[in-house]
Image (cartoon, rainbow, N blue to C red; front, side, top):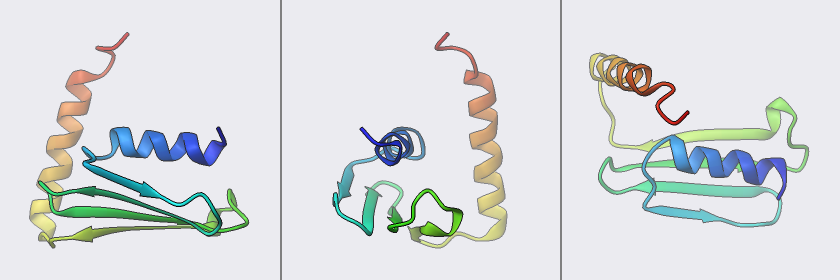
Amino acid sequence: MSDLDVELELIAASLMPSEEFDANTGMPRIIIIANSESQRTLHIEAREHYPACDSVTIELKGNDIGRDAAVKQNTEIAEIQAANWGEDE
């Protein structure tokens, strides 16, 4: 398993609940992680010279939310993560 495979597995497992995970194995490698509940899709494209910084493009697509809603959501997620920190150990 390559470093890219490991990183993508971590993204799929932790970034958002994934109902759909689709990835091709060639280069450029395009990965799509979708969630119908949030109506958001994460598109990741890794090009030939990965892991160079400019070789990866990440886009979050889906319904738009306003800045205030995004800040509130990020705060709530941070609070949940802080509360759960170290529970698995």
